[in-house]
Image (cartoon, rainbow, N blue to C red; front, side):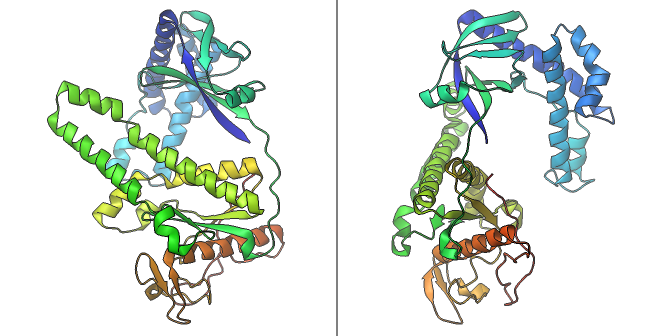
Length: 413
């Protein structure tokens, strides 16, 4: 599996100036080439290399950095086209769509710049790197990292990104880390750990005690922390003084780091529980949920602020490292279906926390009930992937009929 190892550079003042100059020059050229690429019909890596390589080379860059600048431009246009195609900038022909499509991609002055092994080499034993800059090859640039990162960097080969953030330089290195083959879980729904993601309860699994959910998985403390940060941010913005702006700048990523830390804690706990008991992990595919659901203003703020995709990605890569299979299931009707009798009805969800089946009268915690349904779907999807005869991995519809459309299976390897 591929992992990203982030290390912090500790350059001298001269080295810092050379690295800063390199990013400024490369991004200035990238912006110039992006303006030319906007008027071209073909914007692939090969097309830009054929058309623009001589122009970039004439600006004084070496051969490999020239290629990386053009590839960065091509990849940016590829990503923008994917966003346009997926409707992330509105429908085709809309005002926003046309504004984005008709404007050249622009790079920040200190945006990240990729390097390959010809432009950047690692001396892991001495914790230094040798890197190409616009003022020449610069050797002996120190970096600091954790011991486990040292071990991963020892055998690395591939691309490394030079990143400038908050006054410091970092290297994001891509490494190939070994991962075990996923172990087959027991061939029952109990062999899967269902995970229900939400706003009030960040993550609820089938192992959780429904009577203790409000204590273990409640987002109350998280919501209070984020509300406090939002109020402070609004207060500083209203003041608008230089000191207030300096304070805002120092705190701008604090809430993001807090959310990332919480997601790491949740994903580590979930994967450890599944690995310890020899089970697989089944979780919801919440892609596009912001466009599908209608919520109150306060809930919309919470939904848009929390990183559900980040939590899912952390669970998947940690499960892959631990050899735990992962199935990502369709979340439709998981909160409306009774995990005991399979009856599906919107009225089964009495409140946010209460589920009461209108057919068998079973009652329980709504999120825990959804986690049990997700575990059952994960089991069916895994069986469908292992057999030649597909098994529908869906729950009954709200009308009580069973859909035959299988949900997407996302294997962990």
